[in-house]
Image (cartoon, rainbow, N blue to C red; front, side, top):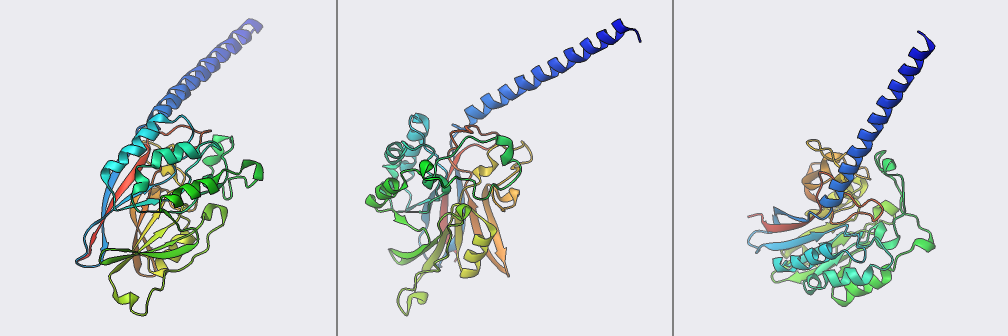
Length: 317
């Protein structure tokens, strides 16, 4: 091959590579644009689970998770406020409420109509510490473990958020158990602080009186991150239903396949939705929310729209 032929071949290869890179960049731009759009495609998922004692009236539970509030998110704010029209009997919040140090006022304003209803909550890592810019491809490698920096410089105003929740009567279940009467039914709660930061410590269930076990009751467990060790502990401890978030449903999913990662050791097929957790012959309904927001440094969702979940608890009989 002559020198001119070699040069022509190299020019052809360079042109082909440039066209390929341009096509990839264009496709990436389209995907990013779609992801920006889908992050505001808020939806309500509805489930029904028969876990209440026989004869008990239905209990409508609104499950919120991973709001990741940032100031100025007007579409999210309006949608959250509209959820009060559902008039739930209980609001369950499984953490990661913030994504910006100035977001607490916006969060409390968005949740204000919902805080008129009874509520319980547990924190997530992005209640305590702000997210940081990261290479998004690291997420595809699996769980990041203690991914949120615990540097005091990145600490979020979580005490102010907790004070706002508490002023409205919402109950903090971080490594706590408590019991709340609801007519003839007793709601027993057990929650853990964020397992993703290794802050979880199981508190068991409220003991109540000597005849408490005879009274109609339901055991409701809460965790932000659904690590298997936590789910096993709740299941062996006698939970009737478990609520969790953290996974974002995978956030960037493969259409027709689903989540690629869960950012914990939960199997990917459980990244979003209602499933059954089994241990030693015992089965417990597990509701994992795909969440409402995203980190402000990864503001896209693909094939995984944001959601709140309305779970109607019904009688077993």
